[in-house]
Amino acid sequence: PSLSTPSSSPPSSSPTVVCVFGSGSFGTALACVIARSSASSRSAHNATSIQPSMEVRILTRRPDVAASINLHHRNPTHMSSFPLPSSVKAFTDPAECLKNVNFIVHVIPVQSSRAFLQDLAPLIPADVPIISASKGICGETLCMMDEIIPQALGRPDQPTAFVSGPTFARELMQDFPSGCVLASVSDDVGKKCSALFRSARMRVYQSSDVIGVEVGGALKNVYALAAGIADGMGWGLNTTALLVTLGCREMGQVASAMGAHTATLSGLSGIGDMMLTCFGSESRNRTVGRLLGEGNSLADVLDARAGTLAGVAEGVATAPAALRLGKSKGVSTPIVAAVCAILEGENAHEVLHKLLAYPVRANGDLVVTS
Image 1 (tube, rainbow, N blue to C red):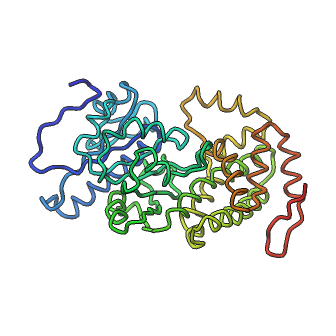
Image 2 (image 1 turned 60 degrees about the horizontal axis):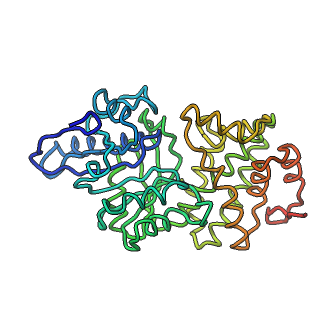
């Protein structure tokens, strides 16, 4: 076998196989979380035969990444300073990676997910749960992952779950206590998928509100751009807190119009993720926003990030989709509109000054005027 296809002898009992689609920072971190959770569970049960072993497989396009993970237990391009558990392997061959798979964790950017899943559809069993950790709204269709997955696979009944929350990849790798929400329309699927991530260091809250979890995960990236822009302009935390608070309300109105539960947006996958992404220095979207606020063009910012493997800032593609989505639901989204205007090249100072000059209704909504 090649270095990118690890060999293994037949185990005495079949392991639970989890395939992670994506070898970036978050995919690597989630693979590590799952492997640690399994090790912790087996230790608690004295590794008896009741607790089968876990095999976590990362699917990557890069042979050098696969070889490094398999030989040295490190991802050479993302989170390279952290060793990976020995149960984490990497593959470049999708068929090998998906052999005997029990769960799939999807960590491919939303804008690329449909084509990616369509290519792998013949290899993905119809009864295997797909857990999406991808956050965003498709720019072409306005679909989120709960629609993209079944459409791409051509299977409306594919079991799915959606995980979101305030979880920076680096802090997951550092094994800091963290929490997330995992949503599924199936209680049974939700319980099984939640167990993959849950440990003493990772609290997992199960939900049935898929729309609420997905909307929160998608829109917080747009508001993080706004927070970063304000920071890049030299404005302080007062301004950021104002924008984030208004953004929470705006996000809740969009989610409510789509049928989400209000309580979901008040939890980890809503306000929790919003706070982390808007205030945290590790936030990709906040970083892109800050660079725009400093006067850099979007093209220059994205070109520079592409050359450093800095990861996709989903808010850039999500913002115009979110603006269209809000309009389709009859919801005013002035902060999203302001971010879109800046992404299109309008002066950040002028756009944000105009945004914050809008009158305010008694209920806190901005009164948008032309």
